[in-house]
Image (cartoon, rainbow, N blue to C red; front, side):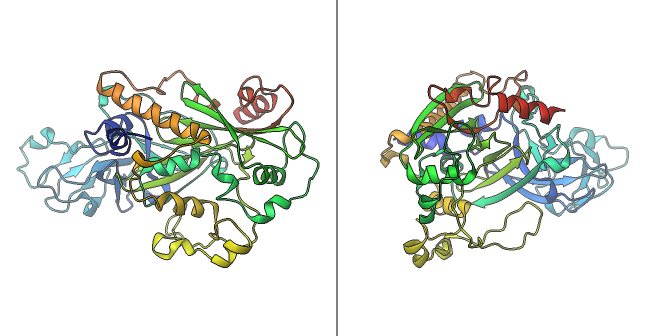
Length: 436
């Protein structure tokens, strides 16, 4: 468990907070590219790390991100006119380019140079993989964008989406780092009866066999390996034939997770704080053919959904107000939860903790090692930064495209720590294919 002070440090992200200062040192997704569909389209509101912002795409197609308040008298730039390479406040016509510079001030005398002295607070952007990313920290500390593969792959090889979650980012992220819950929360009763298809042997099993193993061994052994970007960890289960199945996932500071996939992962989930009480669950897949997480239960029932207003924006139908559409008959006869959909099941448990979970009263077990390590790394990085020590996982020379999750049934004596490394033949072949 954490102390009250530690829990406050971990979960509070507004300007000037320890964790808020840390998160602002990393490039984070601000919105989907699809939310700014074309040049000079209407601006959109963005709330990120407790700050109210406005995003727009200028005439040349470049995204801009400002604080919402015009520096003149505070009117919202959301109502601004997006025209001729700038966003113009409708109150007095002051116009700002994507860097935040005031480029026109028609309410002042023509001979005035006042516009050269005024700027709106703006944040730099980088568009990659269907997301508009931003850096909100000190300008002199900004490091290059960490490219996990989205900068270099063609459009058909990536996809991006986001979904709103009504809870603090940490408890949402903890759900993705919890390897034990997939044997319970995401299981249908039929999963334990999946027939042996011959892939329960050293090597890469079928998705169905992976599901069978997770359904039958519900007490994984968890091992953690620290890495320059955070850590990798394995949930190790014993297959019906007596082999070790290793599901290796990654945590990348500060808010990124890469869940185990067969054979090697090609995507990540990011839990980006809107404020202390809500977050966006982003998913970015950079190589759609890389592998399958295979995490879901066997089910033919469709997950409740609604049409999306914006490509990639997942509109929620399963909500706290309707008890996540839990069906007690399905819970009794078919599935562990009676809630349809893997993500929807995650939302039900993480949001049911309250918007900001009180970790002073929890009781952690042996399968919580990955969660404990994530908290340790974030808390240390935040307090170190306050003491003048630079944040980890920002080395510009590190090959961020090399970070991948994996899953494999291990041969006797095989070390899971070699998965998704240069010692892993399948990983090397995949990385080579993707880079050519």
